[in-house]
Length: 108
Length: 135
Image 1 (cartoon, rainbow over the protein chains, first blue to last red):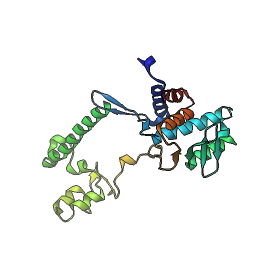
Image 2 (tube, rainbow over the protein chains, first blue to last red; image 1 turned 135 degrees about the vertical axis):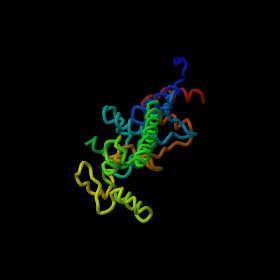
Image 3 (cartoon, rainbow over the protein chains, first blue to last red; image 1 turned 180 degrees about the vertical axis):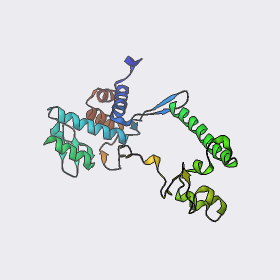
Image 4 (spheres, chains in turn orange, blue; image 1 turned 90 degrees about the horizontal axis):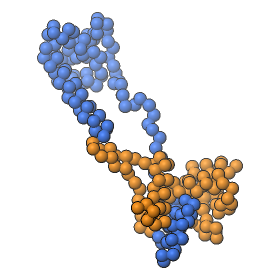
């Protein structure tokens, strides 16, 4: 069953796993059953904001850990962090100051 | 499942603790209990005293709110002005702050671009390629 999953479904599952591994998993326990809360990854044409937050942190951690040159796609100021495509088109603009400070501190 | 069981137990405990003082108050001098009423009552909170004042003056003596303090084994028990708060035993667990609107802004216009962004950030572009092949 799992082999028949499309790449998009696999990405969906991987993002849910990433979300759970980052401490957002919660289980609702009833008397005879347990309900695991799973996020909806894509909401309409956009990403679930909580997933996006986890993804940005994951991307920044990955670029800081690996010397892959991906850091060249990141523009950072104390107020704003922009993640761009390899062609230079902005994908995500981050204004979470805590995350920006962590990224700047990790680079130094 | 354990949460439910705990809740049921706590309900049972509450009902027992609510019943016991009434039965004791009716038989406060009953020697079968082995202690006097004042020993059972113990320390009284200021709030409890304020609640009794005016409405039941005779119960103030029994409750230990008057100048005659309640005693436990003969020792004087001071009036507690602030009831202990068992729920404030330590700092609240740290939780992730929710994402505020605008702190993470996605610059995509359609679902294809959104999938590309998710795949790009995650580091697995296979889903994006498949999506492009379908279009």
